[in-house]
Image (cartoon, rainbow, N blue to C red; front, side, top):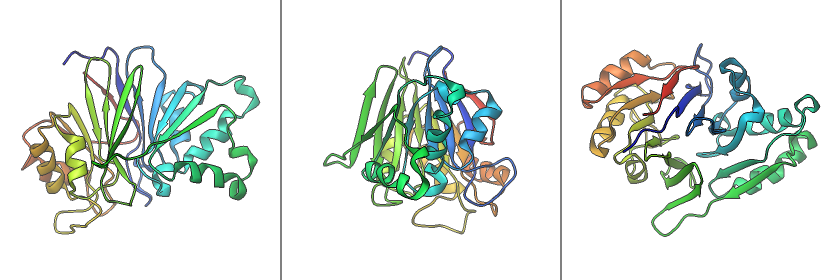
Length: 262
């Protein structure tokens, strides 16, 4: 695997729908190579505000990749559309929004509830259909995405994103311990994975730190970045628990964290 020069992941929202200082709703900015435009991976409430905090303009976003349609992962898609219409920005580049089945319906219904200002005339919508193995994907010049159904909702995805040079970023989205998540994480250079609840509070649709660590180990992931911890779980405790079953580097995400991808 060759490095992706100046590839970077910026954490815009590392928390859940519940208020927690330094941990907003899910959102991540991915730059796949030096000089490339940014891809948003999920776009929960507060994502657009966080872009300003890390110095990324809305006009620098070329793509949004969604894992599922719970509001803490997608609601700022419409704030982004509103921001892109601001006349002070001038002409904005084309924006592609990609996601699982249901994406088109979500976007088409939004203006009736939220107003015409959430329509984006420079936006294209790519709703991805799953194959027989439950996977779906896209291929662009600087990013290849492979999504795997994970059971959190009927169409929720865990993503496997391959950058130029072959670096693999796996992103759990919201997921329990499912085969789809395991497939997305296999051999990942960085596994960005939820660790929602403390050990002992196992759930069908979310993970505990020990479950996250075991999945990372079984998948052969090189490094683990824990995210999406509910307030009852201290991120440092999550890292300690996951570290008992995963031998690679572990870190916990916080809003504003910048991670070089190499």
